[in-house]
Length: 374
Image 1 (cartoon, rainbow, N blue to C red):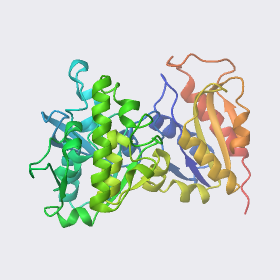
Image 2 (image 1 turned 180 degrees about the vertical axis):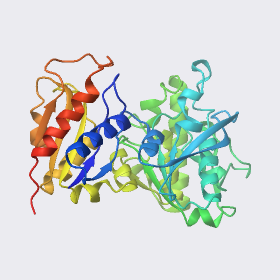
Image 3 (image 1 turned 30 degrees about the horizontal axis):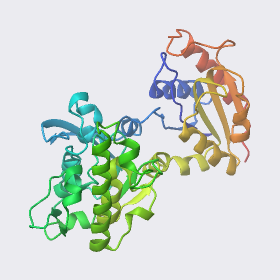
Image 4 (image 1 turned 45 degrees about the vertical axis):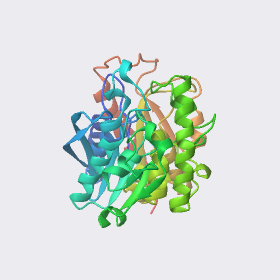
């Protein structure tokens, strides 16, 4: 029996890894010869935590924050091959005090140092997760760390921040390491708005990053100039591509100069793991979280996996701490079984002392009666 286990955990009681281990124990009690693949799923936006859950390593290095102050930042490596970069590690909004937030002055240079370190260690594939930046520099900070030079009309290097975008008149890539060109890059984002204009990144996110109305206008003018200079240098119109506004325009820089593709968060981790293949080859897929009802957002990865299971006629069962109105919707999304540990709605974040043994028992009961074809 082949089983794929990919739960989100039960808030306040067990984290995703603990829930996966408990489900595994329940399976092995009744099917000791079962072949089990575990993929704990984080909630929210935690690419490095997800990297660890998928068996990856975390590397800590010296870098700089959005104001070029020295910090220690981290990136992940999965399968000793693919690098996971979280832009928040060196260029995140949380690194900047509220009173000093100013996307005209902040830079992604520190994130570039993370990528550069990965390249120097021999890695050739990079996934850059772009949510939560303090920046609006179009990625010129990252690109400058990798050898690109952005010059003004006097051939001086422009400030590596949102302020510098309007001054760009020339781009020089003569000092870019050939290893950069040989590497593969992916922009990971769910951002779909335009690059510039009233539906673009400056107007949409500038205020969150500390910009007032005049700053937002200045940022947007810079983005428009940057887009024109990119097109002159690369032939790429970043205004036409969805996702180029990700990370304060980092998407545009990496898409145009590094030939990065753009994918969403779920697709990125599908690529970074063997989930899809393992689900297609499984006899049973098991997942779960604390509560399911119509007004609770279900993990996008969980739903994507349910769709894969449904297309391939694989049974997928969910174990939830409790069920609320509307849980039946999951049957239409690919679930073949939905079970509850408690017959009442639990309080989120409340510790449930008996949940471990209840989960083991209900998993064992479901697995023991599951019919496997062939």
